[in-house]
Length: 110
Image 1 (tube, rainbow, N blue to C red):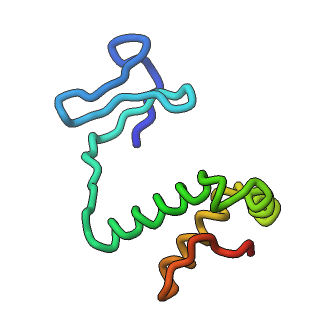
Image 2 (cartoon, helix red, strand yellow):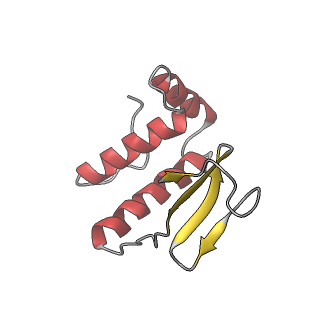
Image 3 (cartoon, rainbow, N blue to C red):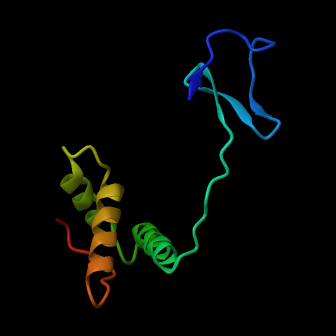
């Protein structure tokens, strides 16, 4: 990624030029990069991973399957790891549901 140090034909630039270069600003710094068209793989394993992540998110949001006390336990489990309780829950949920024969709805607090 190239960093822009001076104005590019103006004081600020953003957008794509000729489907080749993208100009933008990140944390107050202007930059230029090649335009990239992101891939969206629809393989069976990718779709399965997305479904598992969606299930983890909906389980976290559902107060019946995961009450506030349990969310607090996940938050305590995540303290000192640089993760939030949600991130810790999601990582364990995905690991448990992709490695076990019968998927668990709510993994135990680790």
